[in-house]
Amino acid sequence: MHKDHPALHEATRLFVEQQLMGLEQDLQRAKKIKATITSLKGLYAELDPVAEKVAKEASSPCEAGCNHCCYILTLCSIPEGLVLAEAVLKRPDWKAVGRDLRQMAKVTCNPELTHGLYFRKQLACALLDKKTGQCSAYAERPSACRFHYVITEPELCSIGPEPKSVKVIDFRDLERRVWAHCAQLFPMTMTAPLPLVVLFCMPMLKKDKYFRQLLSGLPDPARWFYVVREQIPQLAKEAVGERGGEIVLNRSNLTEETADEDEDAG
Image (tube, rainbow, N blue to C red):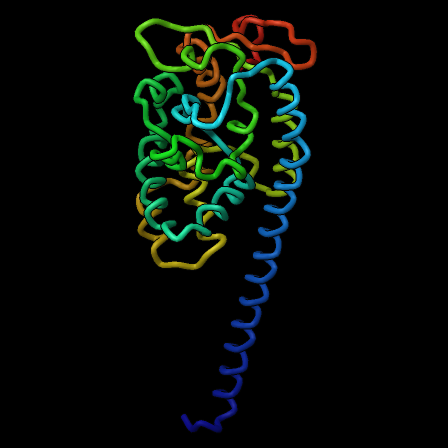
C-alpha cells in the first residue's frame, strides 16, 4: 500500500487518537489516585492528634522500637495501600522491599490462616526495619496499625507459652471514620493482607515490568477478600481468643470491657 493511500492515513489517525485517549485516561487515573492519597493523608493528620491525646491520658507505653504489634496479621484497604505503596516506591531499595512484601504475601494469602496462627509464626511485617526495630513507613501506616495502642506492659504483647491479657484502647470510632472515607474514595470497599494490597497498589503508581514478577502467582485483593469473607467474623474472634482474652479499654469513658462481652471487639 502506498504511503499516501487514504486508508493508511485513516489507520494512522485512529492509532494516534487511541494513544492520546489512552494517555488522557492514564492522566485522569493518576490524578484520581493522587487525590485519594492526599485526601487520606489529610484525614490521618486530623485523627492522629485525637488518638495520641487519648493514648497519653491513658498512659499507653507504646513507643518507637516496641514492635510486638508488627507481628500481627494486618489487613488494609486499597486507599491505605496506595499511601503505603507511594512511600515504598520513593525508596531506592523499593525492589528489595517488594520482594519482602511478596514473601509475606505468600504466607498471608493462605485462606485458612488465622490471626492466632499467624502471630505464633512470629513473622515481622515486611515494612519493619530490622536494624532499628521501627516501622519504615510509620507516617503512612494504615488504621489497623495507626490506632493500635495498649495500656498494659509491653511484655504482655509478646508471644509466650501461656495466654496473656492485653488491654487496648478502643479506637474503633476512628477506624470507622477511615473506613467510611476510604469507601468514598475508592469503589473497591474491601480489605486484604497488607503485603498483598501494597503489592497490588504499586503498579498503579509506577510503570515497571518488575511488578509482573512480584505479583506472579498471587491473587488480587478482591479475590482474597471474597474467598475469606465468610471467615472474617471468625478471624476477628480468634484474634481475641487465641491471644488470651484481650480486654478493650473504651477511650470515651475509659471503662474496661471484656472482648467476649462485646461482639464487635477485635
